[in-house]
Length: 135
Image (cartoon, rainbow, N blue to C red):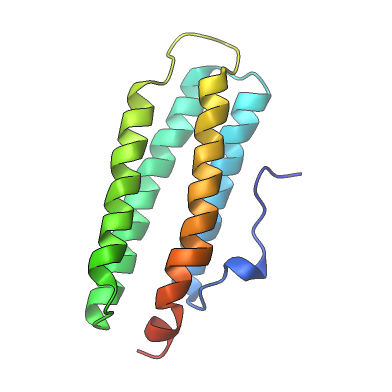
């Protein structure tokens, strides 16, 4: 069973962004698995790095589409993305580099990612859904 499972409630009605969100779910689940299976923290760190980079790619695509469709909530949405990017950068700096066991910090990081991703899609991204679908 996955740490966080995609379900239709997460759909924003735009196949490209739904695909991006599914990929973020997959990366979160890989990070969680690496942590729980006591894989080296380096593997975990690599997955989190990939997740941060993919999130930036996704944020850029979302914001570009919002701009093209004159979405009125673009400024606030950009700030949500910027806050996530800053928080992940801070958390990545504090990741342990040498330790074969999962630490509470890694569990906390995966929990943060799960909570943020779920909240962001269900509460924030759903706000643009209808506007962009009709654009």
